[in-house]
Image 1 (cartoon, one colour):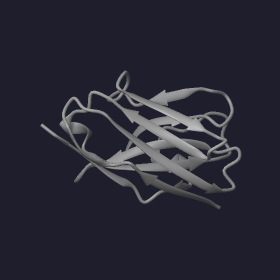
Image 2 (cartoon, rainbow, N blue to C red; image 1 turned 180 degrees about the vertical axis):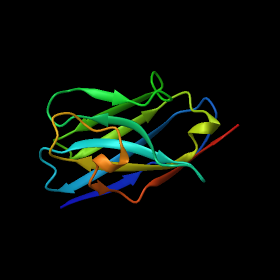
Image 3 (cartoon, rainbow, N blue to C red; image 1 turned 120 degrees about the vertical axis):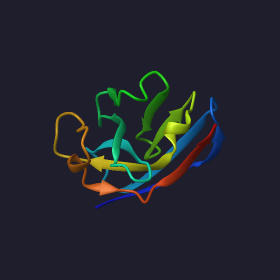
Length: 124
């Protein structure tokens, strides 16, 4: 079992920055970690993923160049640094964990464990 707890969400003006954290616990060894987001009335969307050992990261097209994912295995935490925020980034951001694949998946169904989410609101 893997437990995930997100924090760091809040209200920010367009153009601003925010850093989300996801504290992990349980058997996280070997798990890829990712961030997804879900806006009201929309499907959950892939944001970014960080692989377990190889320092490789993956990003959704809408956040490339603005968001950065980083994991600290020693602290059992994964971060999402969000810069140049836009109103369309407003969503509940969820942390997710996946095991059993060579590279992280990019789809919701690839992930087994999920956090409750943290709300991000970007005002225009």
